[in-house]
Image (cartoon, rainbow, N blue to C red; front, side):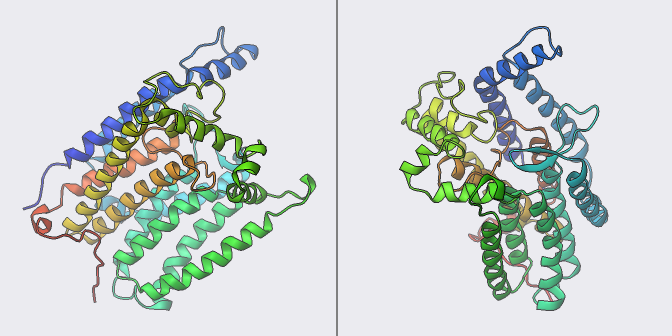
Length: 405
């Protein structure tokens, strides 16, 4: 029997993660807040510095996201199917626009300053959601042809290729890493030919090596827009001695590992992190996981990872339990998106992946990231209303392919 209510277990876990994120932001952002507000005092923007600049902005992001929830959770997700092409086109245009009027940060041009918003808009975050919606629409429309190379695989990958090309121009290596697994997962669940995926994997490897080669430089004059990607990969592959000596890229990773190692099993205690006081850059963003490890230890990290895995399990269960083909594909894409982003961020903090600039879902500071993730989760919860969980109670496989003729 279909449920009329949303999946409250996911809702309360998301709520818990968001509240936990605000608590951690309050802990890690004291020094960065004082630093940025001190600079604002020198420019005459503020009268005196404070320690809660990032916390106030984070609370604003959370409030906006819950207003979004009140609207989306009551909106039939079939509306996204109806306007899938328009949503995807708007996302593509925003990625084009950012190339001309976007601001640059850490070597990538990806932010647009929008009047009256409390943060710079990052179009790529909303593009991830738009990509899921459009690919789900595409898979449903071409379900009978998706296993065909020219009528299914090629146009499917062409749509992703447009997005990838625009991300390369920014360049945004991290978002490409996130989008690739969700594109593969949706194609697989949609009944696509696995051999075609293996062929595209080979092409992707050659492409990635080409990007790496284009970023190679021998002098600062030789640097180009791809050099920061090459530098991050080189430093990631370097041995520990060289990585520690090179303070330009790997200093952040080094300080993050110090924070993680300091936490041991139970952590130093909430608010007692040392690395957050100017030692670890981007502590409120990309590397908040390291401070969580430092303050709450292995036990806290284990609980956090378990919550992400639970959302992933429920998300794939919702995809399996819904009879709506479009909803099935969207649920698969959104769940894959969340898990990929979470574990890429954790992998970077643990130094098993190169630096990417990817935030930790629901916890890291970032307005665009939080809003787009909350939008995705609210749509997933909306889909859960139509899920018939009774038909998957006695099944063990949650990630099934949809072969339709």
